[in-house]
Length: 403
Image (cartoon, rainbow, N blue to C red; front, side):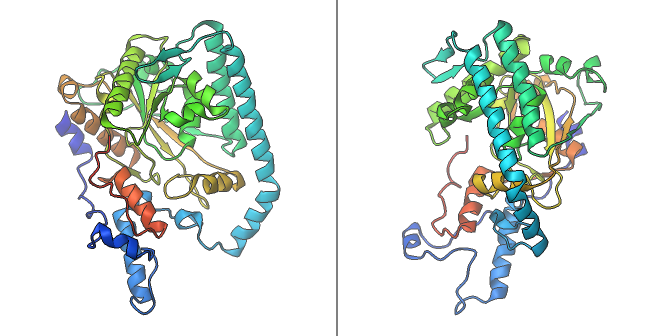
């Protein structure tokens, strides 16, 4: 099977090695010159442009190419300034208020539905959720969540979302009737253990909430946020501390594997939604997949998200969260495309080798979406961000294990 998938999308040549500095770490504190700036008496402008081009080539998966430029701080043409000024006094306040109202309304619904219910707790793994709560309470939380998530996307300018369901033949795969176009996608969701998606923006979460209301993996700090914290517990999020020790990651991996198996075997259990890339890109690349989503050896349902744009890219790559939200609110119309592939059933060989399973699903998604496969990941993204911010003391992350 691996051979057949490789024939659909052969491995591209590996990108150049990530940026490294020839100086030792002790010299960083003595030189705070930004990486993307140059001193006139030492480097001419042509050399600076060449350095920028080299950085963008090495970290292409995180480079913005919209009118707002790198980090959303580029010089705007006059037309864009006028449009932005109009949006600031019209669209922005309306969307902000409506979005806040929707968030508060859903929080109140979740609070009422969980008022006399105790959450499921896993003290050992520090997990807490209301996802396994049954009856009318769970039904209200799910259906209101799906409706209000779609309403929120509408408020943010996603007036229509282009969804398509691919009916393709997969090698060594079971062809179920539910994979035919026009069938209810819930049949597929019940048979898979997890939804697998590329990761472009936090907007991905809103879409999947509106489509199937699955559980996500989130930072542990999310559980303590006002409003959002309770909502995340109703989603059944698995919390992880990203800057934690390896034993914590192993524990979270075990929780995710357990949830995926449970979703595959129990139709009433919440579906898991996983982003195996581990971070966001600019939407044109697909990073290597982590194996956490595939350790359960359960079937997965691949989904590909795209955000076509003309002015502002909705990718959350090298731009700050506040700046991204501001530009999002100020863009009149936003576009989203969702491609649902058939449920992918692993072969016995893939069940025995989660890395092979992850690699083959990634190849399939790349082939069906025309995304570009990239070998870089979160470590290189941090280095690129440090370079954009003019920070010469680059993070020592290339040698850290990215779980």
